[in-house]
Figure: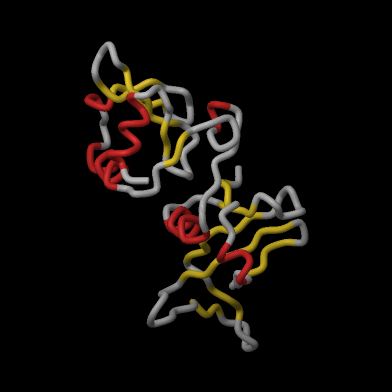
Length: 164
């Protein structure tokens, strides 16, 4: 939902969040402001945000949902997100995984500065005109698989979570 509707819900006492958030925002009727609860359960008045651009981009989102005990870390749940968001988070340096993957230590991350040893024994740096020197690495119990490819199920799933 758009922020205008989310704000109406906050004023009704319903905490709201974006899908990947571990925290939520709520309305403080006494102070007439939005209080942001971070994933670390820090309480911040929106008027005191240190990351103004980030906060404004969140306000512009049309993906607002109500926060509850299933989808919000500080309420006891686990936030999930789409594969598109998973790519965005990997580009920021975070590790992500599917909630339903069997191996507890499995995740994917963005690998950079990739190189390999040629058959002649020299080190060759990978460089691609379109993507540069990056690839998605799958880290699992058997090691690292470079150049992991997502299945259609992975790309369409909404159960991506942050790996620790």
